[in-house]
Image 1 (cartoon, helix red, strand yellow):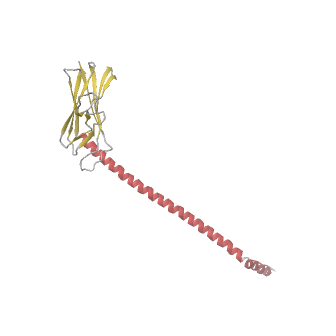
Image 2 (tube, helix red, strand yellow):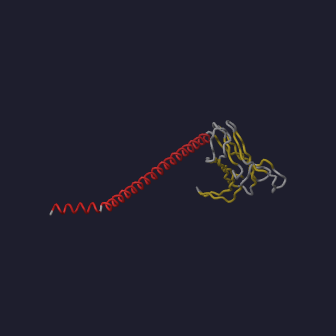
Image 3 (cartoon, one colour):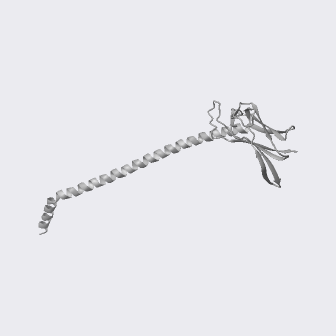
Length: 215
């Protein structure tokens, strides 16, 4: 009886072998699809990781170059000096302001003067506290017309100071009363015009200041 049952089992197995083959074929394609999907995800992950690493390396090189440029600018600026000298006007109430820039660095320096570079504040002090009561913004002119409001009066747009050179910018401002005045010179470096390849677009700020009392 046991032998007969065994024969019946194998006969049924043989009769249904087509369906069983279909099941195994389906499982084969299922596992194959899963393998392809996992492989595709891995390829995408690897590509993304390599792309991110490449971008990170490029950004690192860019940052290193920017740091190198800033370090060079710091060296040049530390080798340069700015001084402010003032002379009270005798004929009118006012101040002549001379700003002298001396370049002791190893590359030319250039800065923007098209905007306000010198500010003159009339100030009042109370202990360590200070406040302004008036503000003036004189300019450096290359051409002065006969009229106070004329398009023919031209402002100096930028200043270049060669290696070892010294340049003085002269300003004048009329004031309405005596007192204590605070004078600042502030400018950002313009693009360098030498051939060192230094890009001063990310530049340091030039700054100097002084107080003067007008009697």
